[in-house]
Length: 481
Image 1: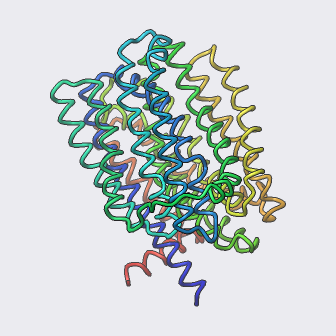
Image 2: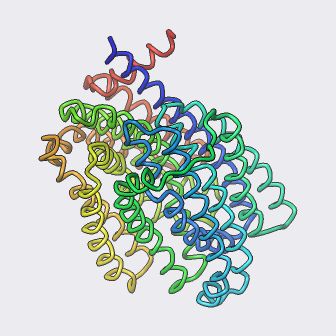
Image 3: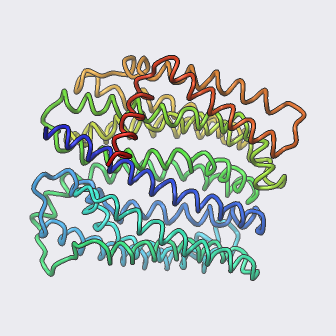
């Protein structure tokens, strides 16, 4: 009875998290469409470049300690408060460093206008320091409904601010202020709605024990973040702001979809697996379920998006953004593999094997940097293909440890998702050929989307996919409640 209750709780929390991410990204997507129609692609290139710096520093804000708090079975107020004050100290130091070095970054990219923008957007580092431990508390206690209200509140309020400033002619500052206000409002709502608040207590011993686990995740996350953003840094330096804007937009559009599902899985799966970390068989079953369900959801969305990307971009963002279409298609395939990465890595983290996690990150980044160096001199499109190849290799690397830890290796995982990928591929072929029919643009897109949905749902029903029946059973259960 307990297992059934926990299972229903996990599904409910996943739905809350997924609903939160979907709603937030839907608002963000609509706002990005409006702003992309108003603002020049060069402004987006500037913000993409600045965001690289703050994203890298954001890794230090967490220091792997948030995950350590979730993973620790008996974490209490002393643990949480110690991490909170340590994080706040680190955030202030990082902001001061960023404030001082911002002119040097601006000089490197031959753009003095970057200095004030970097200094302003870097304020999100301090704000995130306040929010980070609240997020860990919410995740640990499976209170994902709190994320829904804070995220939606921040997203909607900042959207209104950003659109207003864009119409008033603030240009790149409309994007910068929107970004900072989103983080600030999100943090404020979370602070007001989550019961836990830091207490005036601190233990260096507790912090050291958490750092012992968390530092490996910090190094892993730092390697991953620096590598993922290194490409943008290089494009911004070697190519033009427009090139960076098109690549970044081509990355963002499929990422909107993949991130919703991936964050939902990541947030719910880690605390769930951590509770059964001593039972390898249960971890294996949960990991397998996560891979099958998440790929079942992500694959048709990514393939469908790739196959009607040109029509969608032209219709929604206007023809000035059509150069981003090749990147959309390449990166859709890459993001289709994300849920497999997430499930494998969460299983390893939940079992306390941060040492394996770190080793894998080093291997993957060596391969990734080699691909980046070998493609950077050709074109931005060649770099995008490098991302795809790196993603395939990383997927294999991430699955290797679970062959021995869980008796669930890459071949088994591939067999589990192959039917889903096959059905998604058939759907994608039909959707693509509908797109070349001489139909009005809006009608053509609508027909592509509806046809893709019908093929996938009917195909899932006729082929009796377990994933389809599982999702429908959980949906019916929640509706009854």
